[in-house]
Image 1 (tube, one colour):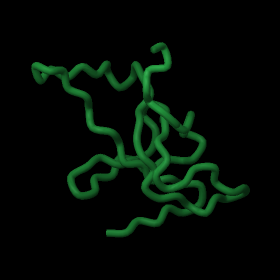
Image 2 (spheres, helix red, strand yellow):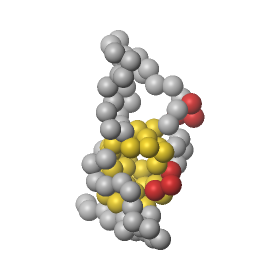
Image 3 (cartoon, rainbow, N blue to C red):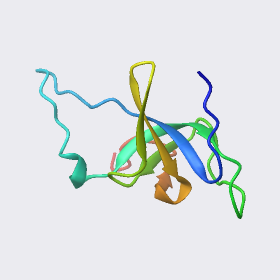
Image 4 (tube, rainbow, N blue to C red):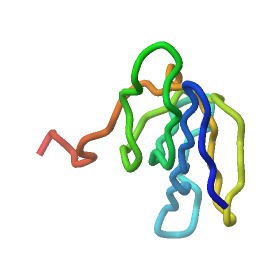
Length: 95
């Protein structure tokens, strides 16, 4: 299935929850932190060009967009303004 977002909509494939070594879910409740994912498709933009592109890793506001399940994975159809940041490198900078 091919999905082409309209206007300023962005389709994001959400990251899978992290699991601890013993199999315990170590995520905090969704309301406590932003969500991460990978951009799968981008609309043409409404008033100005879009600043994200397919493949970008992004940080999203909690509870944003509409949930869509594609091939058993959670995706979100969100507005571009719900993207808080692009993630360049997830390595720990404190090393």
